[in-house]
Length: 245
Image (tube, rainbow, N blue to C red; front, top):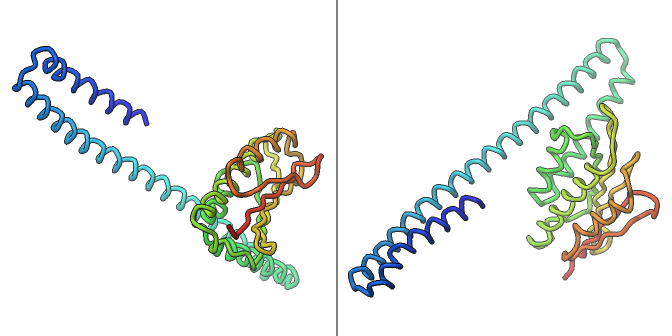
């Protein structure tokens, strides 16, 4: 944004000089020079803006690639831990423990599969990479297998993803937590008739429920979805988005 403002300022100043001479002397020569100068400034500005845009896109791509690498490394680390635990149970002959471990792995795989099929890429990436953010907030996600977010319009899908991210962020920075402690937020996505329901259930102290309520209501302001507090004295909220216009 600052770069764009700087370029506009340079453009205005550079045009002001020949424009002054045109007004002062009312000469055809200065008028021609002004036209040529403006054309040159536009051409130079276009080249600079194109390069600036390319740099911004490259920076955004690098940021995305780094986030993707962190997510993959985190998932790989989790799978290696699970496999080591499973291998340990097998070596010790604790078959019942090994079976329980396999069931936990299957459940997590099933859950991640449901998240990957939500149909909104930005939301899928955010939910799957949240654990790599180093937050003190632990996000536990439950997805209804019947939910169909891919049927939402692109605008509603983008709004829903943005509201979920901002709501999680509001929980993330609400209240205080001791060093090394974590708080848990239960995020549920489900379908209710023609409406998409997103529930946020606190598990532990999330700070001031009234302040959190104000932040969440502000997030949905101007959008088609509605927010409501599930329990007056708790920081538990629900978002409702009609799928039909």
